[in-house]
Every structure is written in C-alpha cells, then in structure tokens.
Image (tube, rainbow, N blue to C red):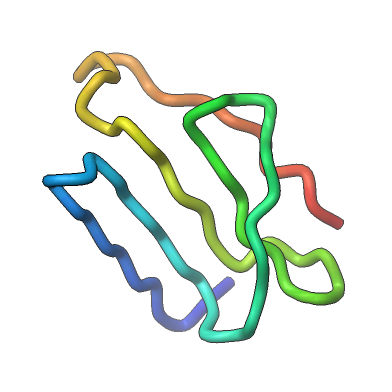
Length: 69
C-alpha cells in the first residue's frame, strides 16, 4: 500500500485523478469507459482517473476492475 495518495480534481473538466506513486507510467483502458488505470513499466497499478465524475449517482458506487499485473 502507498504511504501517500495524491488526488486531483478538475471541476471544469469534471476529471478526478488518484495516484499511489510518483513513478512514471501510462494509462490503460478498463472495463468502464469512464475509468482509466495508470500502470508502471512492470504493469503494477499506480493510480487511476475518472472522467465525468459528476454524472455518477451519489449513493451508488462507481465500479471498475483495475486489471494490471
């Protein structure tokens, strides 16, 4: 588990990003069109992002499987 978690929210873009690591990485699609996972060179999940955050219902979770190795 990460010692620190960084969270960014851009209200104008309606975009949320969560990072578990400062390591270099790239984004990969998930089974949910609104969610991208960020993985490092070894395929370890180091964060995720959500586009269109405000469209999700308040009392229901957003579910996405982060599948990287």
